[in-house]
Length: 382
Ligand SMILES: Cc1ncc(COP(=O)(O)O)c(C=O)c1O
Image (cartoon, rainbow, N blue to C red; front, side, top):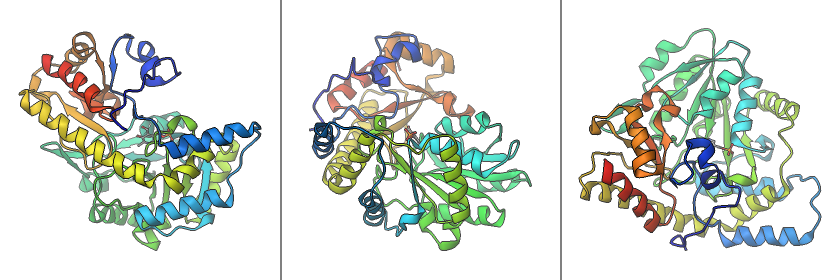
């Protein structure tokens, strides 16, 4: 099923159709933006087709079933008992994040982010006129951990929010329960709200722990952002949700979402979300096996070809944080070679923060045969 090569060109998809816009070249093999080249499961496609056959597409609203499916998903996949009243729907995790920054802090407040990280998580801080405070992750032989001493030193009276990316994009860490507990302890001691972006929570190769599930106290300071977009490759349907037990935080967020008109969702978004959470588990298990296989394939391929490119096997996500430091080349030289010689499109590590110098992010969620083509273009030059 995942071996099928789907021609995505000409479908208004950013990954293939916007190469010229983003990279200045149109003939690159796209191994960048975080969506998959696999078809979404049949159960979702069928539900969308059935809904389309109805023929009327008026304004959409989540039903009791939608709320219950999110609740059940959290319980069965992540052992987290949530209440319907904690859930809000919106049209994307990033829009919800941006609204949350505005709702939960004031202009010039400090928001702490653990870089390198998915770039909208710091861009939105700047765009909302808040101050970005970087708490860089520590790297040891490709394995990243949180620098909690640095975090403590960076907290001031202006610090309002700690942004957590869990699991972490791009470094692929699946944070351990103990790491999350230590982080939360610091946030509790310093009155910081935690915004936890858990969009990659289902794409994990071990047990995932939602931050807010750790204790009632932690739940009370945490706003969780999530969606079925990454898990089931339905990001283009723009349906996400937030989970928050703290009524005051939730009300502030809901007000901001309404102010920005972000709480009206495409009817197909709800249809896909419901089908995914009701019937998609079997497909998800198969997907994870395939992704793990592709990650291992990449590792073995680079090693077999004595490539200078290294990466640490991610504990979550299909995103590989490739380290080009051993090539001895400057970041710009690597970038030019990737585009002009290898002719592949990877995400530029620097867009995830200064820590991303000499790194590029590769998306391995594609048929292994296509992945092999991309890797062969890398090893020829690196
Ligand atoms: C950590 C993280 N958060 C959010 C998003 C995007 O979420 P959405 O498309 O729902 O705005 C991505 C997409 O790559 C991501 O990696």
